[in-house]
Image (cartoon, rainbow, N blue to C red; front, side):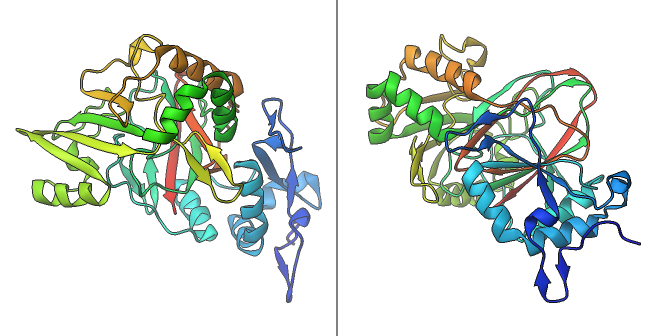
Length: 346
């Protein structure tokens, strides 16, 4: 006999509180609006001794029945961590993504080496796992960016390898308070992202996608057409290409009407405040051609770390992120193995 309440009983939908319970974790932080960031949900069992009897179908049914409530929670909190649900395989994760019903966002123009695993599920950044990936909004350097991200922990890390997240409007507010001139230039001029891509992937780099992989073609003309749709200019250099894109550095989250730090400054800047990221094949500057302030970038990197939340992954975790509201990063893996997968949605 099923020990969990189903999401629907006859024609009457059960309240979310009959299936999902809110959990508090020590890593969470106040979101400034009376809640904790991120939201953490676990299943409710009628008998707590039989939690293992919850099925994937139960979870999918609850998602479909309570999607408006879950979307509202996502808009309020920026991210939801689902913990303790029976999501064990890549196929399970794909089914969870499908249950939400969001359209798929394709990784055209993406800068990270990434491989399709199953259905709508892809590897996360394939750069060496002992390397840090700085904070960013996914694909902030193109106009057709995903609005939602799903992460799934298939193999729990031995140590390290967290995916820190941070509320973007907090970064904007703190940077505007400390560096108003820098933020004014960012809002007025936007940013110029420049990168030289080879024809094959450079697996040692977290922005090492080759142009064939990024534009999903080995035809230069097709690559140019796809890049143009992303607002990117290509300048060919033999088998390599220089990509040049001008994009806003700040956007407005329509749901909250807040300005967000929607950019890839932290993972594109390789100046004195972040010399380990220096790469002669990659640069970023204000849209009017002015260089970035090293002092402002030093404070930006510090604020991102101070304000972020890094919940250690557990096997089966699914994290849903509002890409407009939240930046994410990756900490170095200290003790292998680790396998975290991703699905991008509109």
